[in-house]
Length: 331
Ligand code: SF4
Image (cartoon, rainbow, N blue to C red; front, side):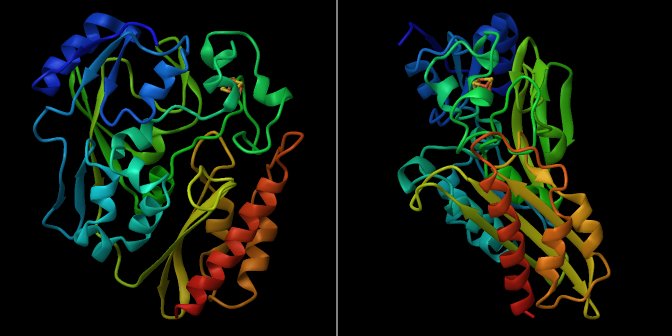
């Protein structure tokens, strides 16, 4: 592992000053379950200066916003979310998704912010190959083994899938985030935070957080009364793994018909993929046993699987059918 220096700032302002001073050579360090592996694997893009935010007060909490919603500090551990009575009461689907992230040991170290902003887990990147994302000029995932961790919905330079589950589960609740920046606080929707790969400060990344910005908070509005929600995830290894395909689904049913739907697929694209064509199809329909098959027929029309991963699309459509059946059965 290369030699690194660790800073332990006492405030977000101090952390931002340090990040600004070192540019893209520095990175925020919280749970370390992603960052330390990048260092261990000697990735070219791994930082030299770690800015440890664990000692900063006010980044680790789960609290009622007083209006039926919840605010979560970005340094809150996934295990704390999994055990939160408040989250379980208001957003059981989110808790279900968090409980399917990795293993209990890793949930005990990983933070919400880390899950949202983690680097992709393409085996070529993590193996230190000189690919686009690691400062090179080739995508090994597009031409090599792309069975598990690569996009079936197309890509640009990089074809890795966005690996996090928390964002997939938060988008249907219209969650938003706060970033601390040198110019003050910045607010984004979850979809704006993780829009898929783009160049940010000279690096390909799945999120829009700049080198001297820090994700500080996630805010989830009050759930609508009678909201039905489900999260399902298919993994290569059943006990813990990243999603081959996942689906976060919410239905707002009023007077027997679907007033509003949210359909977000994970594990198949470079971002949590909100499938608006299915949402529009579901709006106004009555939940029934045939709805899943009809919804699956309109889903993922833009699929562009690579050589070995077309099964991801079948899995995602299967999750849509089973998710709708589950929410219909919950009438
Ligand atoms: S998919 Fe992305 S991370 Fe993987 S080899 Fe291609 S460029 Fe690198």
